[in-house]
Length: 398
Ligand code: C2E
Ligand code: SIN
Ligand code: SIN
Ligand code: FE
Ligand code: FE
Image (cartoon, rainbow, N blue to C red; front, side, top):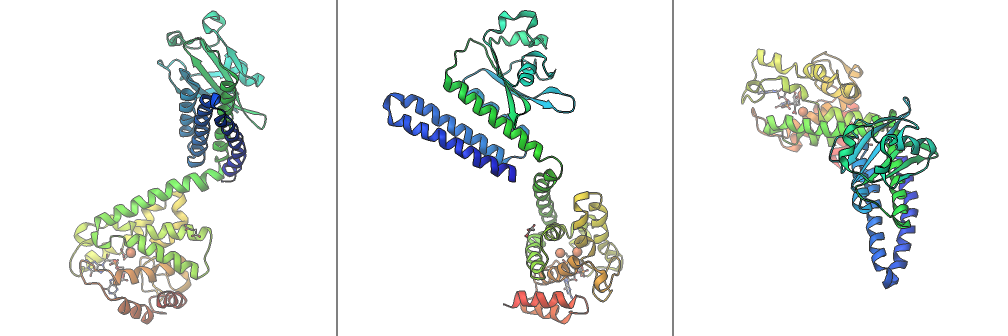
C-alpha cells in the first residue's frame, strides 16, 4: 500500500493548490464560471485518485481516467497506449469515443507515428489539423482511421520519475483552440494516468500476490463457505462462528501474523470435504451405519484432495485435513497423536466440537453451553490438547 499512500499525500498538496485557486476565483464574481470548472476538475482528479486507491485493476483505473478526460476536456475520443518495456513498443490499453476499432490493435515502435514521437522525445505532440498530413500521417496505421474524421490530435507522454510509461492520446473531430487551463488540466490527467500505471506495475510480483490476490481469494472463500452452509441449513453461520472463535483462541495462544491468515482460511473451509458426502448421509436424521460412517470419515481427505492443488491454500490445509485427529490418536483420517497433529488443527478441533454440540443437528438437539463446556473440560488430554483446552476455558469462562 505504500505507493498508494505516498501518492495520495503528494496529490493532496496538488489538490490543495487547485482548491486555493478555486477559492480565490469564487471570491471574484467575474471568475465564477472558471471556478465552477475548476471545482469540477478537482472533483474529477479526486475521483481518479479514489479509483487508483480502491482498485488494483489497472484497466478499471484507466477507464475512469479516460471518462474524465473526455467529459472534462470536452473532446471526442481518447486512448492510452502503454509502453511494453521488453519490446519497446506502445500498445493500446484502453480507449473511449471511437466509432471504429481502428486503433485497438495499435502497436507502435518508439519514434514511430505521433505517439511514438511523444514517448521518444518526452514531449507533447500537438497536430492541429490531421487532414493536412495525408500519407505521412502516422495515424494511418489502420485503414479504418479515416472514417473517424478526427481533426485535432494531442499525444502526451506519461512520465513517472523521468521514465516513460505510455502515451495519452486525445482526438477531436473539429479544430480545438485550448486555453492554458485546458492544457494544465490535460497535464494533470496525464500525471494521474502515469501514477496509476506505475502503481499497477508495483503490484506485480510479490506485492500483487499479497494484496490484490489475497483480497480476491478471501472473497472467493467467503462465497465457498456460504455455499457449503446453504446445503446444510442446520449449520448456517457455523463456518463464520467457528472461524471467529478460532482466531480469538489462536491469538490467545500467542499465534500471530501469517499463521493467523492461514488459520482463518482453513477454519472457513474446514468442512469443504463434506461436499463429497451425499445428502442422504449428511442430512440423515438418525445414527449413521458403518458404511455411511466410512464415507463421512473421508471428508477431511476429500478436503485435502480438493484444496491441495490450489497453491495459496496449501498452508491452510492443516485444519480441513486435520480437524478430526484426536490427541489420544483415536481420530481420523491419519490417526495422528499429540503434537503430531498440527497446532492449528488442535486449536480448531476444540472450537468445532463446542460449536457443533451447542447447535442442533438433524440427529440430535442442541446441548446447553454449560454442558458443552463441561464436555470439553472432560476431554482434555483425551480427545483434545490439554493446553488448548486450558486457553479455551479461560476464554469462554470470563
Ligand atoms: P458435526 O455434527 O459438525 O460434529 C462435529 C464434531 O463434533 C463431531 O465429529 C464430534 O466430534 C462432535 N460432536 C458432534 N455432535 C456430537 C454429539 O452429539 N456427541 C458428542 N460426544 N460429540 C459430538 P465426528 O463425530 O467425527 O462427526 C463428524 C460429522 O459426521 C459431524 O459433524 C456430522 O456431520 C456427522 N455425524 C456425526 N454423527 C452423526 C450421526 O449420528 N448422524 C448423522 N446423520 N451424522 C453424524
Ligand atoms: C490478524 O488477525 O492478525 C490477521 C489475520 C487475519 O485476520 O486474517
Ligand atoms: C461441522 O461442525 O459442521 C462439522 C464439523 C465436522 O465434523 O467436520
Ligand atoms: Fe469436519
Ligand atoms: Fe465444523
